[in-house]
Image (cartoon, rainbow, N blue to C red; front, side):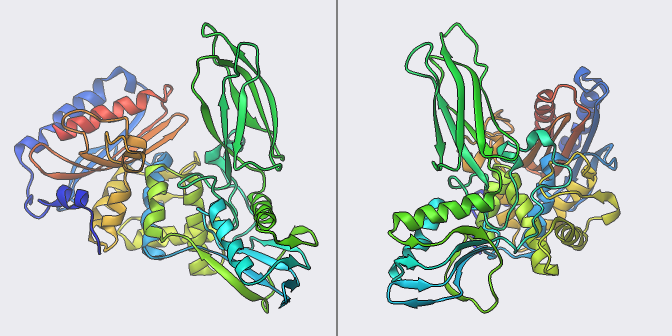
Length: 481
């Protein structure tokens, strides 16, 4: 197994620290003073749990058994469960079948695109698949182009996804056949780029990636002087792929980039395949539609994703919701042959119990943490972070966590602009979480004395969401000093 240098350096003295020095435990008084007296925590439900990463001993507990909404800290549970249930080398495939025969350059039959949950299928991957079909001699398809997303069920949204999140990239629909606009990006979304018009009074310039006629843009923007105010909004109309952009954009503004979910990613992915066939000179004589691949169909080619060990990086570093939900359905499919949330969450619960958590102290509704109904305690999270250190896949899990202060997006992730102080810079490896009224952070850090801690912080009932990050950073800083 390849273990990264950052993991080795962080844990190099974990076998040495067998007891906690007086210097380490002095943070108890500082934490109590802060949690009990900071005015921002008035009426906020705060929970903090800190353990020895060496022994698992609970060394600080503030409301640690209280069940709270974890936001994206739930992805810690999903990632650990996926690595345990699926394995680090697990891949997700996109398979091409036909029910016909190739006669000369003519494929006499339908072409089926069977999606098996690849969250990172790029347009370049689609082009590579079609290129292989071209090399096999296919120049004309005498049949339909059929999308098969039956590997998962047809429920597109987790049960508690707010309707207001539906058009956002983090609220993308879940399908076994989907696409990614670019590497590490939210599957099932397009990237909308907006920049000021060439002069005051002109409409903003709008581009969409990937560019297709399936996306309709309604541009109701205007460019205003530098003394104006940016009031730009980007939304997709429900049940359509019409994206409406309105408001004012300043003449000196930099380009604004938003991720917007598409309506029915299966259909959009099917269309991308059709475009690629056309680009490669392969003619389709019939129509596009959805359907199941016949059991007797012949496989023509197969594309496999990167292994799970690499896919958990955007899941954890960038907190990619769709990855989490697709992994959840995949666990259900592999273990119970049902690719749905119910069976996937059942697997997560079972895996977490194997890893030492109490299933009676969990309430799970999705794999990403976007639900306001999910419940877990910080003591359970800090325990999970301790227990998984004995797993052979732990170095991969640890390396997937955001690193405090590292401005490299694929290292620092959601912590790249946080915790840049002397004691915390690159010394905190943790998953963050944010929902309206909720903020969380859980992971690993090292004290001044060199002792490694697992910690979990969850804040609920925050009226000022943004204050939560500052509160968390102060708590983590106290741990490291």
